[in-house]
Length: 420
Image (cartoon, rainbow, N blue to C red):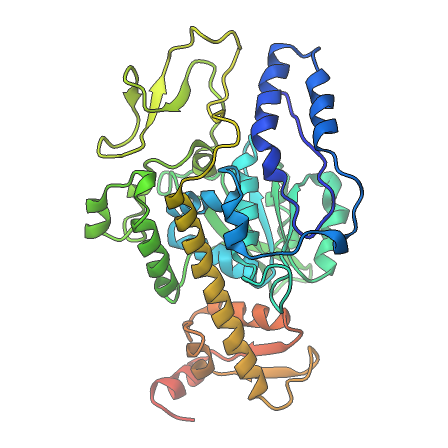
């Protein structure tokens, strides 16, 4: 196994993905000749920067400026792929990230697709204001963690701002007290062979020993409204090669098994646990190769067995041109999806501000404020959904407030029949 990485300076907006293309090539070169390492030092000397304070960092000019100068290695350009793969269940991840919960992604090696998912969850759950604002502080992305990071995980958890981490250690599946949401990319059952499974960690009552158990979780019906908007943006994104007729006749979240044509290889690893092959490579558009995806696709992934030009023992099919510039359509799609998430985040926080302002006595985390089903509906959430209720309680905690959502049958009865 060969691994190459860089140390990125601590800043409010680190961009480690700027080095991805180069690092992949370095790994391949080291595989060819492990003794030759001069190019690593040369790359480091070329890109190292002097120590700077956060006050000296360039100002944040919004996502449009960020996307305009980014290459295709930027996580935002993979957002459409991840949404197609995870479907409407991706909004469950969004709620946990926005509520600043502890999210763990369990994945088989390689870990790139899991780390990409972690970065995207942080990006979509951060407000448009970016570097300032009440909800602009990003959830911590811890990267790949192992058993040696348990103390670090506990320290970050104590800060109360949540975190997202990836791991290949299956023992974390038993340490359910460490996280609130588990995204298991390695679980492939006969009933769900391709969709990543989501589980929440719940406290198990009725025992003298404090224990937590995993419970499967999906989406809530209140997610349909936001997903419909996201689905409309994905439908307009023809550059990913999805047949227009398929979108016109069926919704993606109602037929999830039709989602997996023409996503990029890295994103495909989210559900396949993909590993480099010693006998095959993937590349786009070759007249001598056999198409893997639907023949109606505009940009098909094709399988090639022509290995004559390679002397390597293995080929990484994710290697492509260095620093590929995204197309205009890719930029429009990325900005459209980000805007949908950020606008929804702004809407939720504005509703929460109005609710807290109209509630006497909501002065701190010590004072519990009651939210009834009518208040929940104002957030475009389901009054009978346990996940939506917990989400509002989490969202209130990010504002330093303690809210209790009442969703008993008496409360629902009063709401349905118009009683106060």
